[in-house]
Length: 157
Image (cartoon, rainbow, N blue to C red; front, side, top):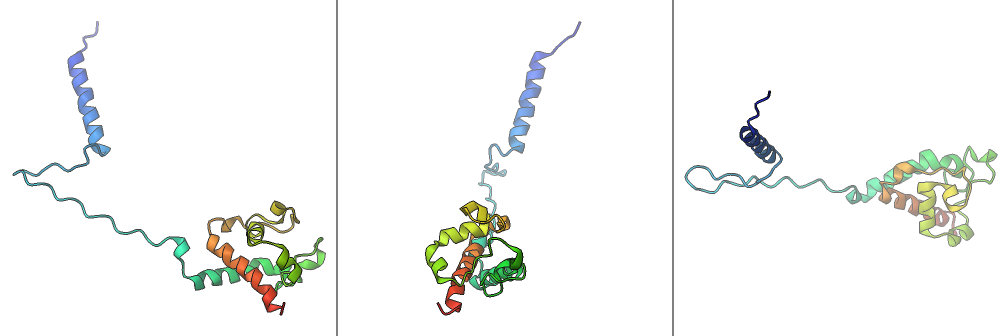
């Protein structure tokens, strides 16, 4: 019927496995060149760029101000008094960030949670949307939190 060469087949499999191991990085030490001298090592890879958290503080603050001016002001108003152009029809009305009683009643973490996840995440109005695009930007969330905190000071409170 069929004539199998088992020894030859095993040799072929061993050669294929060795070639695969070399292609996958097995034996990562380079072979010594003829003459017995050790092979030169590859240069170290270039340093990775600085992480996003190391962004310039002024750029982060500017990004937070831009977000407030384009997203938050619509309901909270330019100065955070809860009197933005879309606030008239909202029940409950948007938060007045200038209110010293509110400022004293909330933690920084509470403000961060509302910024990222929206009002419903902290038992408040679902009309306050979250900002999931800021989840990977904790420095911008902190700058927005500082901006909200700064609005009370701006009102003279």
